Image (cartoon, rainbow, N blue to C red; front, side):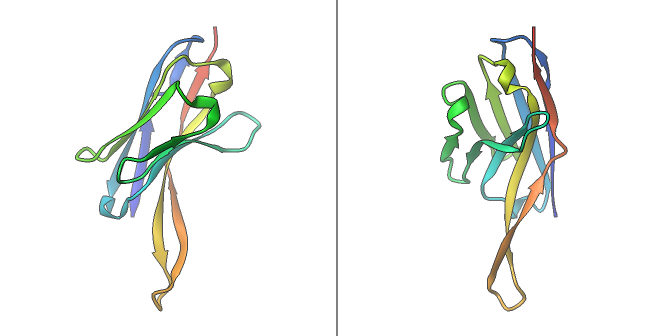
Length: 125
């Protein structure tokens, strides 16, 4: 089993910065890609940024140039540096990792999605 715990959310003024952290524990050797998602109040959850285990990153268009995703392998930690924050960035931010899964006969099965509990980011003056 893998557990994810996020931290670093809070209240920040527009134009400010925050850094979110996500610490993985348990069977961390099975972790490959990791990602940050967010869910604004009353809206669906959306992908913010993701990173493969080889370090390739991609971002939602809305955060490109402002957010940076990074990983510290030895610490089993995923980060999201958020700069020039806007009110539209307000949301609960979730850490995610898909775990490869297999049927008993060895055929690939749908990934098991592991989620953290979320951390609230509020951007407001």
